[in-house]
Length: 198
Image (cartoon, rainbow, N blue to C red; front, side, top):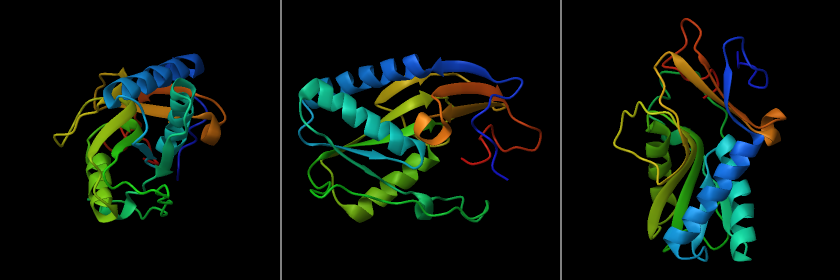
């Protein structure tokens, strides 16, 4: 059973709300433009589900800053995950690579929460099967720590130190009807502070 992510639990507390999320995405967009010296060869690839929505929002922010459209797509990591045998099967999401591809370009992977690093490792494996970017960077809305792999984000909306007992739930209007980042306690028996559908 997938948890209802749209309502806060009794112990959930908001960490970011809609204006905060908009503000950090604007900041991240400015940081991308500064580091990339523009956004002409940038490709944003969102990791389903919420990373795709965040990538689209970032593309909009980049267009506001640069006056040009930024290529945006999605990258499904399901078949590259190292935990497929440990958890129930997931439905495959869409991988949508922009028409100009990723070869020789700066790919910015976009995800909602960085936790163990395993999803990003899977994304890097998936990218290897698609093409050869000039460089790969990572943008996340929330970095909650507890890395199991040597992976770090280049752009972070909010660093949120958490315990293993805590959960971080990202709600986005496109999927959940509102924007919020909630910090809560995991239910007994839940795994490693991950939400039921992560």
